[in-house]
Image (cartoon, rainbow, N blue to C red; front, side, top):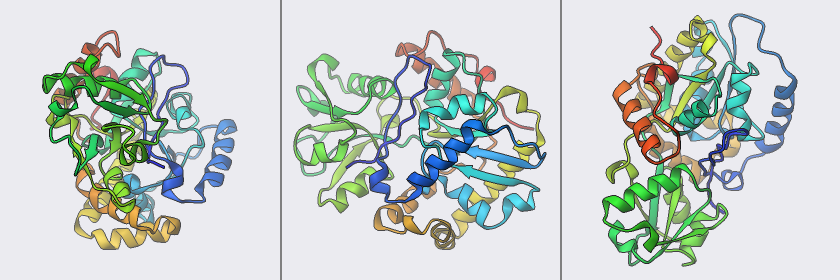
Length: 339
């Protein structure tokens, strides 16, 4: 099994990102998430002024550490907020659920934000959770692939085409490898097993904070090439989105202030943060999630409200050049910095 995350939109023509196999994360939250999502489908937006529903992009995992720690430390309560963290049964509902008012906040992916915008889904980014890419191009550490150029004529496993296909294309181009010289193999989310078994020579889309540890636990060492070091513009992996009419709502600014306090607390007190995390979600107390916790800590935004407009402009241009969207949107049309 391999970790994957599905971020497909229910209406947009683009395919999703991927990665996190829920079986690897080993939690009974599946039934809980299904029940919560059923309630979400019929729920109205929270009526109380200080309530906020945060729809996660996947099941709770170390990527959500600042949120969980902020909740466990009472930072949301201190900010006058009652925050519900809601895992979806189907990640594809997140963009439209937020846009239609079934949740005030959603955790989403910067690449998919451009796809949503092009598809007419009214969403706007107002904060950042994970401020670096997590995707990787992964090979076996003791295998024959020492650099990306060695992939010419080789097989590369993938789960879903789309953004990651464009990402791979840019990385190969930078290495001087013609894309038509490699064979793409759909491994149906079994990224690590396919690589370990030798069915493919590399995989695209594994998360650097999970995939390498998963491989190690299965008895194989992996080596990752990072897209942002091989021609792909840097982007924010996880962002906070809302519908445009809520941008002036002061709950959002208070929410981000509490998330920032949670992120700083994690930086200063990582072991205490882990204890709080597994107290809230004891089924995540295993070797995979423990290492993922450590590997993800440096990637959390310490200023979640800050917006790097130049970064968003560069990435929008990349999405357009890759043919994933008709044209790069103006940054102010998809992202804001709360004052």
